Amino acid sequence: MLAELRTRICKVNQNLPKAGLVTMTSGNASGRDPETGLVAIKPSGVSFEDLTPDAIVVVDLEGNVRWGSLTPSIDTDTHLYIYRQRQDVQGIVHTHSNYATSFAALGEAIPCCLTAMADEFGGPIPCGPFAPIGSEAIGKAVVDHIGRSPAILLRSHGVFTIGPTPEAAFKAAVMTEDVAMTMHLAYLRGRPCQIESDEVERLFQQYHTRYGQAKTVR
Image 1 (spheres, rainbow, N blue to C red):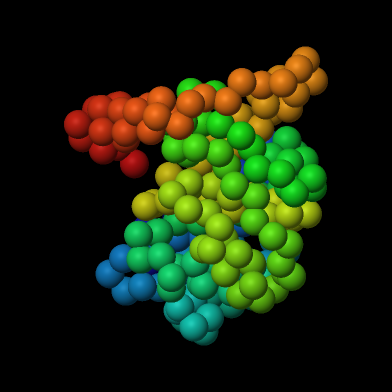
Image 2 (tube, one colour):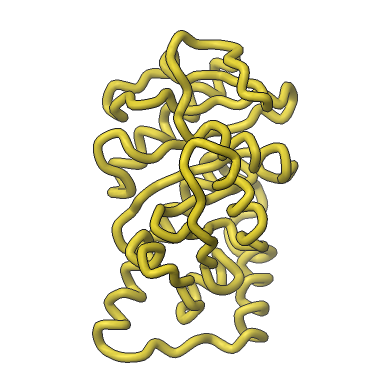
């Protein structure tokens, strides 16, 4: 069932530790099949190096396991809530990446002081409220506070990113940690300069309409 999607989700999950975004078994990635609405997600507590496409679990939007013998991620309810509320989202990544999560530990958004942030996120990366793990509360916090950004921090928790594909959500997770590290270093030296809102909008629109090649590459 959904062999191609499970293979992609396996690869995205395996790329999380390679990108330095997770440690041990923390964090996860999922993807939704647009035709069936079924979701492929990392199994709970399985190390990333041991993942195979056959280990990826397929669930429906109500959380019923439709394929696989392992227990799905403890964050499954979070992912499913987001998918039910956001029809445009087909991929979700969750990490506890260090620099971004340091902002979450302070309950602070990451202000838009870099052109890379304006391009990718269209403004600051917001920080949502604390929400208990293992329920739909985290998903609701994400949906209610993420805005148009593909990334959000949750206070005292970590990072959630969304995208039109699982690969796009992974890219947003990588970019989130990258800009968080740069902003952390900038704060060590002084007070970073925020970009004016009209210039943020110009950069965002330019990046999303003119950047890259005409043919989309997954």
